Image 1 (cartoon, rainbow, N blue to C red):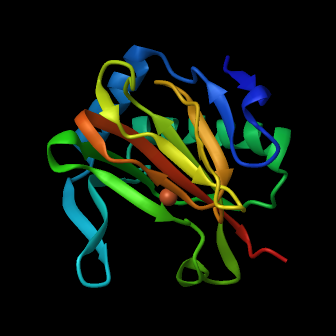
Image 2 (image 1 turned 60 degrees about the vertical axis):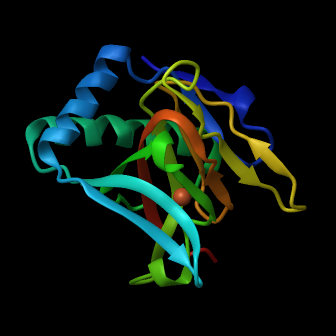
Length: 197
Ligand SMILES: [Fe+2]
């Protein structure tokens, strides 16, 4: 059974459920995704030369029994977080995105929001985002902090460890800082719902 960690929900920005998966389960999740989903290597840029994202991703669909079970576990965690704190009106979980940020190429994802105008379809938009950290920031990589930008421009570092899942409202600006050694691995999801009113 997972443990809710409301102390990490400082007012608004994010909410963490600690130790959702054991080390072995995290290894299994990574292996399962790697055998089911093709790798997409790439960067994303804004303007002439500013790279806003350097990472390798895999799109993860619930297209076999084990992945369906993973989805179900994540949906239970979404409900736990949403019922405890966010209380958003939600409809469904989009395909997941497994992401690796490599230190040797300065992997990062600059400030952005997940809920953009372009992602609003059928009067639904991304409302709740989450990130499950699959490896250990203490030993497996350096850099790669997950940062929020607060309303006044103040930067806040998320306190997350291996196996934690962190939820936040999709319109909140956030980034993954540059990884300088090793590889940061995470599984990211977005939950949709009726557009904000
Ligand atoms: Fe994001």
